[in-house]
Length: 176
Ligand SMILES: [Zn+2]
Image: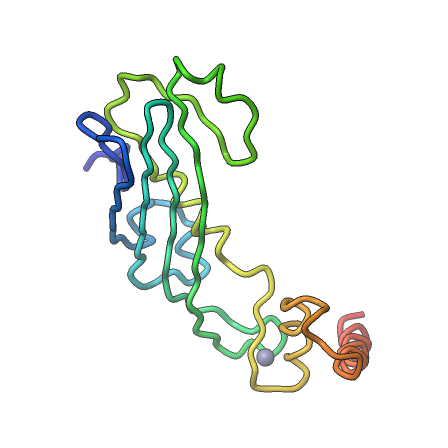
């Protein structure tokens, strides 16, 4: 078994200008990364890759979709959640790199003779980044406030806000 196999990659020779769509399917075990298996990626992982090629660059948009088995941070109840991760990488051909200038996206230079763009590592990172920092269930009022906070302040009314603060105070009592 080869360890360095390319799990998710795009073949460059023969790729014409325009947008190309790819779909891959894998499991967390394929990445040989214990970090990916630990937090509950136990199902099929769907990876959608969109590659937009021009004369000077290839813009790759990655999207990962998987169901994850998580648990509530507060009450430890199981939480079954669909996780979607997105990541954009711009591969600029080396002979055009100087003209491309500064970009906001992840920006890399590739050789004109590159045969395959290996996206395995980027997919792995996209998956890890798609894991929520906080996981809460909706079973108990005490668990709700954190999920409200995730939705941002504009989504909560002043009333909810004070309930949220009360719960936060309770939480502090619980953990300190
Ligand atoms: Zn909970």
